[in-house]
Length: 334
Ligand code: SF4
Ligand code: MG
Image (cartoon, rainbow, N blue to C red):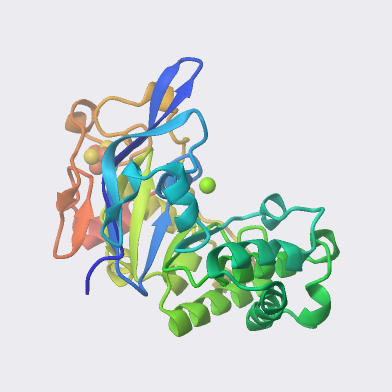
């Protein structure tokens, strides 16, 4: 099947007081209709900048310096703002972690949903209201006929996130970008929202780009995964291979930070020591070497490229193929 989205060698930079910094560098991936790609990594690794680049919502300080973003054949990097407005909320929708920041507190739910429905689907006011109610019903909002006239503050966090999803899907986008969609929600609501996204994907064939730091969410939702570290893709493969045989030490570190529920409490095992490097002071050589338990001399000098490391598996690490599974297990973090 043809790709819906192809991001090729994307490089995005931001102007700061200390000069321009490269926020994401040489990011490439692709997505087919109906497919879900998970983008995983700690905060500050470039996950959100990747999605904001696709939406061309980088603000006045950000710009795409290199690369292309092909969406249904056209390159989004060359589009005018007017063309992008046609695509946003229509062909590509986005949902965020905190729905309150994207919902306007002074307008009713119905009003806000109606704006985008009228704009993109060219419906009349009466049809628009009926359609908004239908969408609210679809995402499991109880009493949608009443909720449509409520203001955002009258709803719980889980309900607001459902409203956001209803809004995002009301124009039947080909691509849904979900940036930490369940992070602010409690576990039960989180599971419901993920179920909802799965169902909508199944019913409408929407492709999903799911951004999260939560590998549990990735395991549940994604077909394939890219792991980002310090603005670069460090590993890419299908979701089964990633969990079976992670190749990059960063990915392995993220996995050892998954809470172990079987122990009866939310016990976090070792997490990766250290922090993501500042964009102003990227380490020489491998960007992960300051935190990597495997680092050797070469890693300090030479930056590894993203290398083929098995069929359908890419990893940005000099040693990706040199560790046996046993050695990987024995390597300790923290
Ligand atoms: Fe660690 Fe070296 Fe691999 Fe970087 S290249 S992840 S420092 S082993
Ligand atoms: Mg983010």
